[in-house]
Image 1 (tube, rainbow, N blue to C red):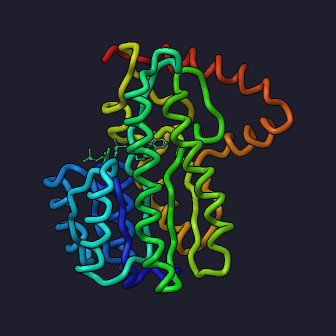
Image 2: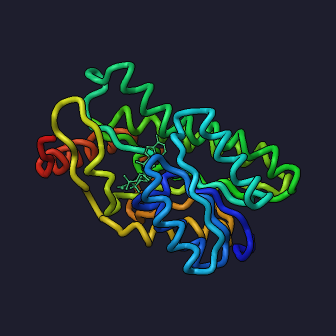
Image 3: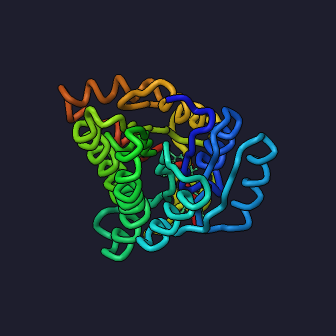
Length: 268
Ligand SMILES: NC(=O)c1ccc[n+]([C@@H]2O[C@H](COP(=O)([O-])OP(=O)(O)OC[C@H]3O[C@@H](n4cnc5c(N)ncnc54)[C@H](OP(=O)(O)O)[C@@H]3O)[C@@H](O)[C@H]2O)c1
C-alpha cells in the first residue's frame, strides 16, 4: 500500500512503539489518528507529526471501552473521511504465576490487549470494505507464540491476537484488505516500568533488545510490503520451527528464560 496521503489510526500512540510508529507514518506522508489515554502526550505528538507535514488528530481513547473505540473511529471519519491503516498496538505487560492471577486481572489484560484490538478491527472493517482497501497491523509479541513461566496471563492475550490475525487474513481474501501480526522482542520503552505484577516482582528485559523506532519501521514496512507475520527476533524464528517438532525444548528454554528474567527482576 502507498503510505503517502493514506490515513492511519495508531492505538497506544502516547509512548514507545506506538509513538515511533506514528512519527514514521507521518515522515512517510500519511495522516495519523493518535489514540491512547494520556491526552497531553497525544497533543504533543500531534504537533510533532504536523511539523513533519502530516495531518494529525489526537483522540483520547481507552481501548478497553467500546464507546471510546467507536468515538475514535468516528473522529477519524469526521476529520479525514477514510481509514486505510489500523495499528492495534495499545497494551501492557503482566508478570506472575497463572495460579495467582486473579480473574479481574486477567479480564483487564484481555480487555486492553485483546478486546481493544478485536473491537477496533470490527469497527474499521465495514469502512475498509466500502473503500476496498485497508491494512490492519496487530502488535503481538514473541511470547505470543512461545509462552514462558510467569508470563502466562500476558502471553495468552498475545496468542489471542495471533489467532485472530491468522483467521482474519483468510476471511479478507479478495477484499482488498489484509492483516499482519508483528512480534516484537524486548523493546526499550516504558513497557517494563508500567507492567503489573501479582507477586511484587516485575520481570526485566531478557534476550536481545531493540529500540522502538526499529519496530516502528518494521510495522510501516509491513504495510508497504504486505506480509502475514513480522518476527523481530531472528532466534525466535528458529525456536518456533523447533517447537513444532520438540515441544519439550520450550520447557528447558523457559527455565533459562525465567532464571535470567528473575535474576534481573526488581521489586515493584
Ligand atoms: N516493550 C516490549 O518489550 C514489548 C515486547 C513485545 C510486545 N510489546 C507490545 O508492544 C505494544 C506497545 O508497547 P510498548 O513497548 O510501546 O509499551 P509502552 O511504552 O508502555 O506503551 C504502551 C502504550 O499503550 C497505551 N495503552 C495502555 N493501556 C491502554 C488503554 N487501556 N487504552 C489505550 N491505550 C493504552 C499507553 O498509553 P496510555 O497510558 O496513555 O493510555 C501507551 O501509549 C504493546 O501491545 C506491548 O504488549 C512490547
